[in-house]
Amino acid sequence: MNNKVILISIDGMRPDGVLRCGNAFVDELMQRGSYTMDAQTVFPSVTLPCHMSMFHSVPPERHGMTTNLYMPQVRPINGLFEQIAGAGGSCAMYYGWEPLRDVARPGSLRFAEYFNAYAADATDGYLTDRAIARIESDHPDFVFLYMVETDEKGGHDSGWMTDTYLGYISAAIDNVKRVVERFGDEYTVIVTADHGGHGRGHGSDDPQDMTIPMFFLGGRFAPGVALEQVTILDLAPTIASILGVPAAPEWEGKVL
Image (cartoon, rainbow, N blue to C red):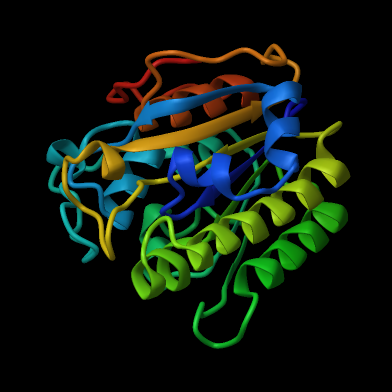
């Protein structure tokens, strides 16, 4: 495929959190690409349902996941990984939360690595290292890098919008910077959250849980432009369009 995409999901990252984390690269992301600070996720605003919607471009009532426990789809819908693999593309996935393995069907990933977020410090950094090494060696058409520490060690353990939480966002943005600086000329890089959070949890329809930031860096996206009326359902159709891969007919999102 002539065009390639890296999608980075920072679990539990609120828009006001990314703006207040103190990392100067946030401003660079907004200046170099298009962005939104008021994209909407799906309800329930829980990690597995949100990522299933991210990759399958339908709400939970259609893909059937309403908790973090995977249930086989009654009426299966092809997700982004399946569409790319079916078109002959190569996909890679690096993730720190094991249930995410179910967002991709067996056979749709050429490369994958899971690393337990509580097995060591700086899990997000380790997975970023591993993704960078894979991209350098094999140049997959689509790479999904998932960072969990903002949610698990920041939000749930310490509380959303605490200094600890903001520190994990800043560390995640440092990892984004490494990816953008190394591959920004070769890949379109998209950075998103799956949901926000408040207090020590998430999952409700409260705007603090439902509103997420997104950043889009690549030739299709004008620098410094704020996008409007964006939802998490738009990510799979947009990525498929960039790659030149057909969208599944059931997908509900739009191409940005």
